[in-house]
Every structure is written in C-alpha cells, then in structure tokens.
Image 1 (tube, rainbow, N blue to C red):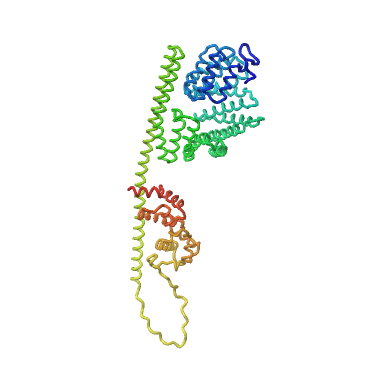
Image 2 (cartoon, rainbow, N blue to C red):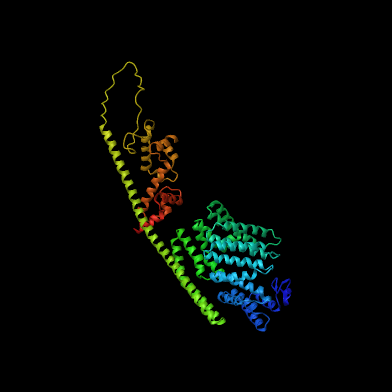
Length: 608
C-alpha cells in the first residue's frame, strides 16, 4: 500500500493505469479502515475529502465501504450510486470507479433490484471491454456472475448461461499471486454459479461443481494455501456434489458425499449445518434437517443478520417444511407463528429502508430524477408487498392445514383404537366360547361311553395265562386342554392339526406367551415333543403361521387388554407384562400391526 503512494503506478495504457494507484490520501484513509473502527474511517475520509486529498470518486467509494461494514446498506448503495452516476470518470480514478460500480452491482443483486443491477453491470462491462489490465479479469468475472444471477432470477435462463460462460472465461484468465486471493475469488464465483443452478434445479449444476472441484484441487497444490480456506472450499465441493447427485437420483453417491461433508470442520459448524439443510430436505431426511435448523436462530445472531424478508424466505420457510415433514407438528406450528410475528416487522423495516434511500437520493440528486426513482421504487415495494402478502397467506394456510391434519389424525386414531379394542374383545369371547364348546363336547363323549362290565371272579386255572400283548395302548386324555380325547400324550397318533390345537390351548390356558423367553424350547421341555414335531404342527396345522408370529399376536392382544384395564401403566410396564423383551420391540410390533404407537393408543383411549 505504501509503495503505491503519491500516484506512482506502473504500466499505463493511454490515460488509464493498468492497476490501482494510491496517493497519500488513500494511504491515510486505508490505514484508518484497517483499524476496524469504521466510524473513525468515515470521519477520516470526510476530512481528507474536504482537504482535497481524496477525489469525489475515491471518497464516495470509501464511504460506501464504511456504511456497508456498519450494516447501513441503504447509505452504502447510495454512495456507490453517486460514483456510478459519473458519466466520464477521470483516468486516475478509473479503477476506483469500476470497483465501486462492481460493489454496487453486488449490493443491488443482493437487494433483489435486478433491473438496476443488470443495467449497471452492462454499463461497467462496456467500459472494461477496451481496457487491458491485470485487474480486468477479476472485475469482469464478478460482473458477469451478477449479470447471470439477475437473468436467472428473471427466468432468462439462456441469457444467464451465456453470462456464466463469460464469467468462466474470465475466471481462467484471473492471475494468482502469493496471497492466493485471485484463485480463492474465482472458486467463490464458480460456487455461486453452482448454487444458483441448484436452486433452480438445473442439471448444469454438475458441470459447475466439477469446475469448482478442479480449481480447489489447483488451490491445494499452491505453495502457501490458506489451510482453513482450502478445507472449507473442499467441504463445499462435497456438499454441492451431494446435492447434484441427489437431484440426478444417485442417492447412494449423494449420501457418501454428504457424509464426507458432515465429517469436515466446516460441516460440523453452525454455518455448515444450516448450509447442508438444502440437501437434507431434498433427500427427505427431514429429521436431520429439523435438528440442524434448531441452530438457525444462533446462526442469525452470530452473523448479525435480521429476520428480513429474504431471511424469512431463505431460512424460516424451509425450517417450517422440514419440521412439518418430520412429523414435528408442534415445532412446525411454532415456526409458522414465528414467521407471522417477524413478517410485519420485516416488511416495515424494508419500507423504512426504501424510504431512507429515497430521502437520501432526494437530498443529493435532482428533483426530477428523484421523482422518477421514487415512483419506480414504490411500484417495486408494492409488488414485493403483494408477493409477501401471498407468502404470508401461504404460511397461514400451511398452519391451518397442519392443524386440520392433526384433527383428522386424532379422529382416525380414535376410530382405530375403538376397532382394536373391539377386535381384541371379540377374540377373547371367541376363545371363551370355543373352550366352552370343547368342554361340552368332552362331557358328551364321556357320557356316551358304555359302562364297564362287572368283573367276574376268575376261574382257577391249572396253567398260567400269558398276558395279551395285542391290547391297545393307553391314551391319557387332557380334556382341560382340548375338551376331547385328544392329548399331547398320544402325539404319535394324532394329526398335525390336532397337535396344533393341543399346543395352542396349552399356550393360551397357561399364558406361557407372557414369559419373555418363551419359545419352541419351552414347548419341548413342557411336552417332551421334538423340535421337528412342534414345527410341523405350526407350519402344517395352522395355515402356515409360525410359532413366533402366533406368540407375538397373543402378546399384542394381551397388551391391548392390559392398557384398557389399567390405564395408569406405562408403556415399559405393559411391554414387560406382555412378554416383550423391551419397550422398543413392543412399540415396533404394535405400530406394525395397528398403525400407531402404544403411547398414541393410550392417549387416544384416555381422551375418548
């Protein structure tokens, strides 16, 4: 900076220098700027301008920078506009003029004043076309980048692609130095283009991510790269590649790239988590997105942002959708209420900012120009107000939809809970009726059996009588289990269907299914039957139902009855009492069968 004092520049083309030239006034002003006290920087600039040490272009350019750093965007834009309003800037101030104009284009694009941003960018590009300087590529790539963004937002996609192609041409011509500022700025340009393509769901985003990746690789090979910056840029490559792969349906590849991003230092930071939400929402990983958005308020506070209209659309609305799709209805409703609360203040702040800008223009420009710009600005504010009014109505409609869905879900749950209770009660009555019929049948069979003949005394025999080995084997009946002469004791003589009935009644009557370790081994120990015989009984004699599925059905029915009879029991207590090994297993099986969790069922029953 100090070696460039007193206007000692190098290499001029005509009257315009090939690079920025600094004089004594610039050195003093910049020294004040680098202290970080921008009020002091502004006061020094004003003093130097009054003494004639700074030209109007340089002074207004510095003022614009000072107000930008102090967060006063309206005044920043106005001072940059003062610079660009000069039709023929002096040759010695040409690059300060271009630099201020480029900053104005960036501010107008950020402020969504696309029409003025486009006109200013084209005007500056025309001035730069005939200048040959090492500064030109950096300014040209930024101007074409902003021009492309404005065209993209105005749905002029073909024109935007041409502007982005021009930006890339100047990226390739941007010189680098030991500070690596040139290559870092070029990477940022490519990232901005890639992000714009991703936001508009354009497949060309992959090309720009590849170009960004190549330039980051080149940066990594520089002699003295800034390590933290390189890691951040590499993390962004992972993130944008994940978004591209997700957009193309390459889900596995997208997942791998996002995991690589989330493992970086930047990916684990608050800013990285917020940036990753776009991919998470696209991948329908709504729970993770909702978790990341929990840090949004802290992110807004740390970066000194306000909840203006752009922040609402860029962050709060996606946060609402993430929570809603994650099933977090209460969180989604809170976000909707937050949007409705900050919307009015954001709109008022926007109008005040526009009014302050118009007042500044009125004080510094001719009345005729002020009236024209005021009319244009009022039309713009009216359009924005209508658009944001529509957004607000949409948000309220979403909130109403969430509430109605909650009501519908509650009503559906009540119907399902009532049906579940009726089915379980029907099963219980059916089992009781079936058991009564079997016991009645057993009594009828025993009553129909002929009375035993009275035993006559045996006549004395001279020779011993050998026993008759052809007699039928004894059958031990267990009418308490089946109600007939069929029992487990004569398992070799009964069919698989009959054995299944025996085993089923044994399990149900003695409630063996309530044992958490109950299984085939328990039946083997109780009955003495083989593993194969029990398996055949359940696979052949029960419409191919497996023993675990049958036991799970009994446990779930028992759990429903238990929750109806003892509403004060917790889900964990019900799961243990019903024979499940854990509350998670119980919940998973309950939801798979009934379509709701045990907690929801208990709440629904309590509210009936």
